[in-house]
Amino acid sequence: MVYTELIKQIKKNFYIVSVEKFKSTTANSFLERYTGKHLLLKPELLILNDQPFGFKQINRKLKALEKYPIYIELEYADLAKKTKVLHNFELYCEIKIKKADFLLKVKTAFPNYKKYLSIEKVSNVFETKAATLLVFSKLNEIFEEEFLEESLEENTITMTEISNTINCYLVNFRNFIKKIYDLDNETNQIEISNDFFAGLDWR
Image (cartoon, rainbow, N blue to C red; front, side, top):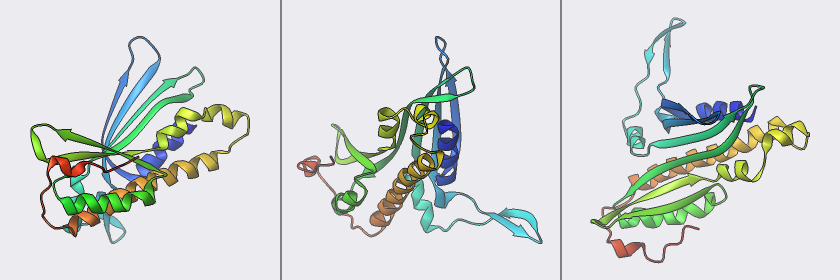
């Protein structure tokens, strides 16, 4: 039930463009990988005379959201009663950083989302004027700390509560990506050096 609700919420909050599924050769476990985009990039159906006529053109400015691909991975066991039990969940986005002002604004915006996100910096030793920020959803912590299927059976939590929690984390992740997009559009072009990252705390 939790797996089904999670997939439903993922498809509701993101524009999924590809899905891969792998099965373990030694156990009844599966890995699913989704590649997605911000929901604002999802084509909107155009209706003419109550009939599908095509898709509305996406605002050219919003196309810059393509720079922030979204990656999702789920690991789960498929049990005898067709119950899928989640073992691991990961939702993250890569953000390329080349502007000092942009980085500072990301740092300023982050505390508002700290409950729902964590950020890691990846540097390339051969590229001193750029780095990548990996934005991770903290939704995985819920699946690590609680066996939700068991809690449902014991009536210590309801499906509505689980659904609302999942949606809250996904919406905040999605909103942060949009915030990054907004900040990127208003920053200047000051290049950064590798030591510029010193002292920035993303915990």
